[in-house]
Image (cartoon, rainbow, N blue to C red; front, side, top):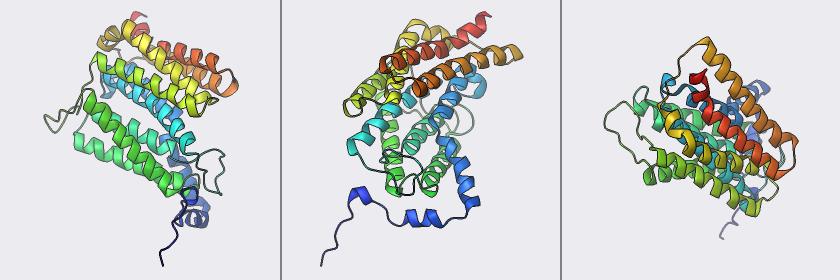
Length: 295
């Protein structure tokens, strides 16, 4: 007799019961580790890397490309979640949809993208570190009970596929040696990825018209297109000194821009206004190296 297939909506394979059986101390550890895939933390990290540029081992153009990857992940994740419409596990403290995992998809695109774009160390080591971080985030989402295993596997797979396509169709891969960046985006590649992020966000609105994060992603990506076209080349060429003034002015600017963006998305229900806040925030973030240099 042929066994009955498990419906995708009840796609667990025993991981929920396992998560429920874990000691509180273990769950607390994975609660902390899961923040390695928090989208706002990743946005802050890539914004800081963009400000400092080569000082932290990733060219400013590469950091802008990584920012665009993160914005693509927003539209892709929310659009797919609403397209499939599959619930989270019954023990999840969070409401909403679960397939695919946004943390798994987003962390794959961010950490994987940074590993490809960075110039420090050997690229095999960078990819290994990225893989460990992504695997940890994916595992944490299952062990704290907010996703099924299928959700995180799908998130990682989609993230890897998107990364491969974005680099293959854009700057390409160039492993000329054991060290250095695996890919070096040009100005046009960053612009194209920002445009793609706008498109993915608009596509997401077709299935999730009320999602504030989509409006924020669309606005930020649109602001990214305008700002990058206006002064991206100058910003990419600026060298920012590591000084107290840089961290005070640049760090303050980052906090203001990110605060306006995240606060507007959480506190205001007007989609177009959220998009405007995202656009203003993106212009501010991309202009920061020039502002710090001039000051």
